[in-house]
Image (cartoon, rainbow, N blue to C red; front, side):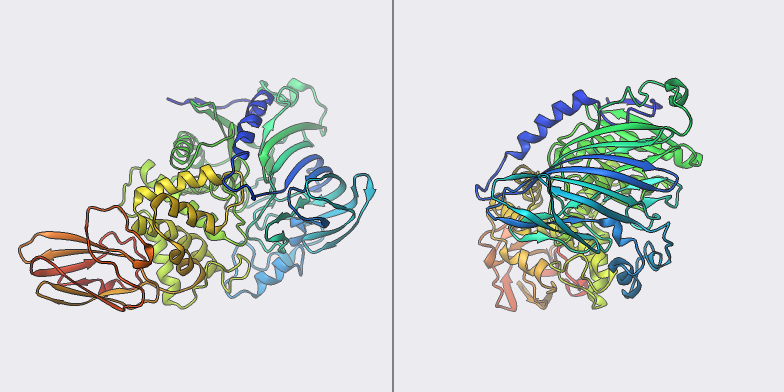
Amino acid sequence: MKKIILGLSLLSIVSCASTSTTNNSTVKSSVNKSTNQNYWQQHVDYTMDIDMDVKTFQYKGTQKLVYTNNSPDVLDKVFYHLYFNAFQPNSQMDVRSRNIKDPSSKIADKIVKLSPSEIGYIKVNSLKQNGTVVKHETVGTILEVTLSKAIQPGESVTFDMIFDAQVPNQIRRSGRNNAEGVALSMAQWYPKMAEYDFEGWHTPPYLGREYHGVWGNFEVTLHIDKNYVVGGTGYLQNAQEVGHGYENKKEALNIPSGEKLTWNFKAPNVHDFTWAADPEYKHDMLTMDNGIDLHFLYKKTLDAKYLESWKKLQPKTAELMTYFSENIGQYPYKQYSVIQGGDGGMEYAMSTLITGKRSWGSLFGVTSHEMAHTWFQFLLATNESKHPWMDEGFTSYISNKAENEISGKNVENPHAGSYRGYNYVVKNNIEEPLTTHADRYHTNTAYGVASYSKGNIFLSQLEYVIGEENVAKTLKKYFNDFSFKHPTPNDIKRTAEKVSGIHLDWYLNEWTQTIHTIDYGVKAVSGKAVTLERIGQMPMPIDVEVTYVDGSKEAFNIPLRMMRGEKPTNATKIADWTFAHPTYTFTTSKEVKSVQIDPSKLMADINQENNSFGK
């Protein structure tokens, strides 16, 4: 059984320094795995010192960034993200929100109404490369840097930066004083080096959607009012100095009113660093049998019903951690924090920010989803701006399965909601291809359904194509081969092909690069002959259940010829069906009473009414 430690001192937010050492070696061993000798990715080492003024919500920072160019290219420029600059009137995020057909209620027209003391900004005051001043220009949410000397392949350079910033009102993802009174939700708060990979630089303006980051190590030193409790990414290095073991930190440390404490965190092999702070945080910790510490930070002033849910959440979070580790790959760090904050639910390195005034079901559901993101997008770090379906969709798939099992619901298809969402955008003619950039969808609805629902169906429908067991094996191999890397859509496709032996290029193309739909129907039944027809443009293998006049049943599997194989099944396998032929006829052994296409309902057929005959 798991050991639960409740009501600990406020300072044991993350594991101590000794744990950090252990984890460094654990994570680095994973990074060295590679299935492609030509693969490369950049590396960063951040050291930041931050002085926060909790009254003005402004902070000053120094940043030392050691950047290693592992690419084969010579770099004469680099680029940083300055995300907080989006929270200013007339920013691209502001204008986009006020002009999109269905604006998010979280943003709407809130940014344009911000006063100078409420906006967000990051101002870079000086920047040096190996001690030499470099030219830089802030263009919206991007800092464009012209290097004093080009960075050669394999070379590491040091950038020293001095900056100051202001935390915006809580609107999207990050900010101050959220709707539940959390003082600081600090995500995407620092000048963050943009990713450079085989596709080049990734420097989209920040419009409130997704992120992409460079793998590396972080050391963050934070100076903040002594009354604030801090949690987030990484391992706390100085727990004793900030009051570990004291019930009343203020009196025990004898710190004069208004003075600050210094918190020092280290985070090995992550691609982001997030923290949150509030003077009313209560901190609980659950230590799992495998040594992983789960931290829970939530406002102690919450109503009793919410406090009860936060207590109930703790052992369930351990079950979720176990489920994801067993079904995808072992969580490689020694801590994870669930923190009340933000504007809904959003995943970050070793942590998540979620709003806390929720029913039990909602709190459990959002925690399941955000924790699952640790695997899909954080450890398997796809570019979620370009491929949000691999981030949100895969997360939805595995979190749906985890919730279904842990909650004991055991519904036949835990992904049914995604199929309904997908059918909605198809029927309303607002679907867009999954290849659309996250920021470029015409509507938020199209983005949401594509990324969450259709991305989820990519995997749930893949069970229909190659079999549930093969999909389970695919996820484990995908994690083993691509954790701590930046996998692409082709990587998940090739992984599934290697596991199943089935060709899947057609599946990746049709489902993600087009808006072709699936529609199969029973065209005719005559005695022992059954004729099926393909009406939609996307081809699929077909499972058919036939009920005979004598009451017996038989399942048939019709492979799609371009699969060059078929899924493992106990069904009767019959001749394959080509894409070019619109109809297919097969003969049974007995007279047919009724026919049902896809009784599993895992195939996203947009018209179920023509899928059966005789029922």
